[in-house]
Image (tube, rainbow over the protein chains, first blue to last red):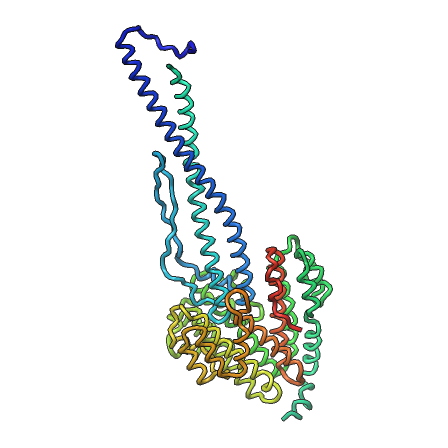
Length: 179
Length: 351
């Protein structure tokens, strides 16, 4: 028992009961903190694993999409100016939702489609098949990007509470080595 | 008929025919393509191209070399050659050249119209226009507010005016979807070009008319295939088919009713030329697509154009073959730069 953590107390039966109740309270608090830090760690590890998988998949999907762009240009000629000029409203949009993990709110992004494809007739006379494939590949890439963004934005949201709760838990463990 | 071609053609056009045949002889051969496919980087590609007729066309490019720079320089070279031919030509060859440039002009006009409607600066659109489709009124496009104004103020002077007449008779220009407008213009252009070649008669008609018929039918097939699953109705689709091909009139009517690839194939089976083409189409991602098969057939017809003399088809064929060569080189360059070599051999061989 270290010197500085000694509590000055008058040795009576009531003081003992009060002390026991305080000890119980401190232990419950410490267990709750441990549970919180465990839940956060679990979620943290899951997110990290998903981030790594998604990043690898992202590399593959982007490569495939860039190659399908080259294929489409081979058959349809240069359609880039037409596409850029006809941009108006976004077709794929994102909704932000909140998710609760052990008291910590994390943002989650979800994509949804709105409106029709304004480029339906591009490539009507040449290269339509390749353009359709190109659109599919890049749509897949965009969906993956949204998922990755969601994961990466919840990462710092988790990190800080995880560290603080594990620090508090360490502190409490040190303190409650009374008895 | 044939005697007159042999007797009088060389007076006006002999020099240019000789020149274009010389240019055709410098197209890349199969051996050149094999060398290009084996390159590891774009720098290697540049070195290999220096040994061909392209020479040092990339000599002034700074590092790093990109595929778009190669594409731009090749196109500049083709434009220089084309402008040389055009400037030295006499009628009726010069009218033929004007017809050839109309297809690029149509693309440019659509770009300019779109840009003018969205109030984009004319200068940045002009940079993106195809150089072969230049016409003198291009810069004046930004004065118009609506497409109909644009037509009555600017486009009336260009060679494209008669093609717009066909579209204007049904709707005003404002309501048409830009892609439908593009395809309608191209249809009237193709029919006008075909009539010109047919009226010229002689060997030119014998060579150019089959080529243009194939182009018309190819467009009909491609439009049909690409309109499955879109909002384009069958009636609209039928108005986009050029009528100067072999499919007119029964084939086009049957095509307008087709609803999937199999029905399209059945229509093609009635025509001896198109049956083997459709049979060569592989299924899914393994074999060739319909577009690839059409490109190959076009290249074959263009190469055959050089087997006759004293006609204008050689100029058309040379331009198309050169463009295909440019597409091949860009394809190989993209495969090399993206390190995706599995499909590097799917270029269309020419000679």
